Length: 436
Ligand code: ADP
Image 1 (spheres, rainbow, N blue to C red):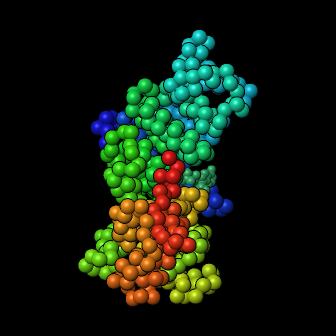
Image 2: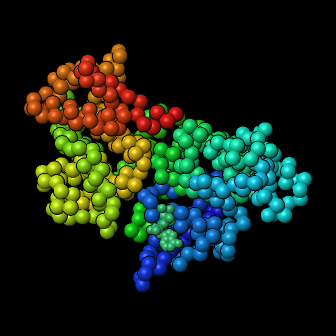
Image 3: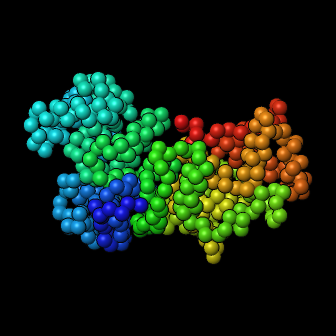
């Protein structure tokens, strides 16, 4: 973590909005310090107040309560040292790429010659050399977003705020642009002193930030502040990267139990191998979506059987699966979504698969199976062989059912494939690696 002076200090920030006759508290008592040299990500389910915090920090919005300090001074009005890049950067379609960047400098009163020189230089730095005279419609989404970055940087902001800047891009452009932003930031070729980025993606946060702030809603608040201590550029395949992603997931899942208590041990080791609950993934997503719509994301378990139209056995298997995967917590007859469960319920299909894959990879029975698959020459195993191995842990019928569940979950998570004809199990790269 940076030992530099604080750039932004939030003290007991509260934001309420009128909701009919009542007041709705969107953010409550948030304390946060951003220092020079930090790249900080804000992570959390939709509606936890991430965008609201960005607007408050940049002075676009005055909080209902609390204080914002910039370099130790109370912030008044819009912060001239900060810029926000939004998900889809609004470029003027009738201006060329260069003119779109110059607009920002013109607004600050820079003379024409300087404007032109600065814009060309910035476009060069974001890799748009040669596109100065193109119009936005001629550019891909990724290139348009780069113009957005160039425009944001034209005013040399000390604080660069990014609100899900990659989420509207196709996966390849997003990955390329992430790398380029990290390169700009770490090379010191931009005058930016700190970056604050809102994201939905845990992996994106671990890939880019040196600090991750996890928020939860109801009301919006900070629940964890984690340092990510890894050199740039980061490699997603490294164990340390995956462990860090896992640590952030565990924080979002609100887990405190040691792993062997929570999830059992791998087959073949002393202790209990946990039986995976017999569930359909579509029923599990149905349960999580239902909870996401409930007040406080909480429901009485026995009432749920009625609302979801499932038997109580199925319901108990579903709540067991939701707990095992870190999507919900069960206490005193109620089930409550964790921030991770909320994030899952609100994610795209791809986002859900990513979250599911990361959770499933942690389960000892999956770790055991993937380690066995990796150890084989062709990274494949016969169904019968795996079933026999599982029969040492479970009664024969259950061994077969466990294997069915493993295949079902593994296929959904895109970490396992199963060839019905040859009755063979294979390893798959997984949804996150697939993007690269
Ligand atoms: P996030 O960016 O984490 O999705 P937001 O900051 O957009 O969250 O919103 C936090 C909460 O405040 C949400 O419940 C949202 O509906 C509410 N909210 C945001 N802006 C307004 C507004 N201008 N008026 C009323 N409610 C708002």
